[in-house]
Image 1 (cartoon, helix red, strand yellow):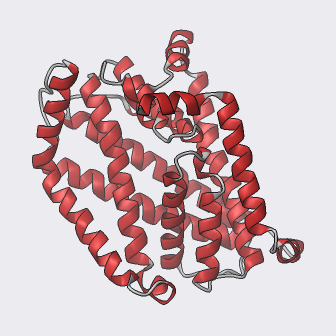
Image 2: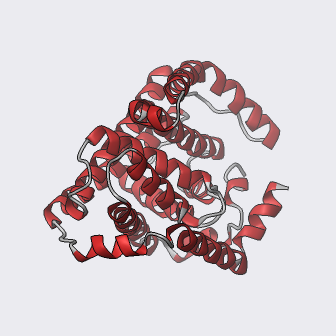
Image 3: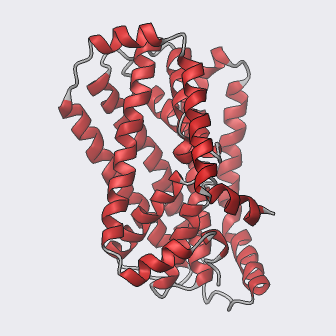
Length: 328
């Protein structure tokens, strides 16, 4: 059933319909704010130094996340050189622009397996890396926004504490749970059992890198905002919270390519709801940050695609549902 849905969502006409629906959703949501947006844009002055610094931080964060993924691979006996891993990671990152959000996970496993890494290790590292990143992002979002969102949503502090405790508990049990799950997956797919499994130290280190990545993203976003909309609140803790929460909202909108529209609406709503900015500045920051992050996600992936051999490109283009092929 899932594979059928994913194949339908991959069709160009379906992607176009979803994209048009998303744009219509944005227009309807912002139709009453155009005058305020126009007034805020008229006084806009870009500070390119802050924007450049924020860009450097994001690229360094990518580098750390790539290393985290390599660590997960090595924990299951798979080894990739850093530049090979960088090429694979940046290309797979393009998959988030396809509806479904599973394409990037599948592409990571598929391309890693083509480099000699076992299918089980490639699939396991891809899925676990994504889950760790989402869990870390959720924990960071709820912890850093607990005070601010308590006024907007009473009881949010309790939810944040429970989410943080749940995330830590999950990381604690992972070293015991993962070998059982991965061995069961290997038997189910008729694959050889992994020669080794991740240690608790490797899992905690990878988790720490993912937590750091969300903090770094939030700081980069704060610097970007300073370069685009200096009138917005400069509290870095709130920027970390709103960036993490809005990014997760966009990720969970499975049918929207790159979370387009949903991330921006969540970001603008939180900026205004937390008293960080007015509607006009929030809309401008949401739109410009989308362009900024899209460039930083897409350009490295395109560069990586040009480094592939023709045979590698052919295999990648034929993978209609990569998440189902990585273990084969």
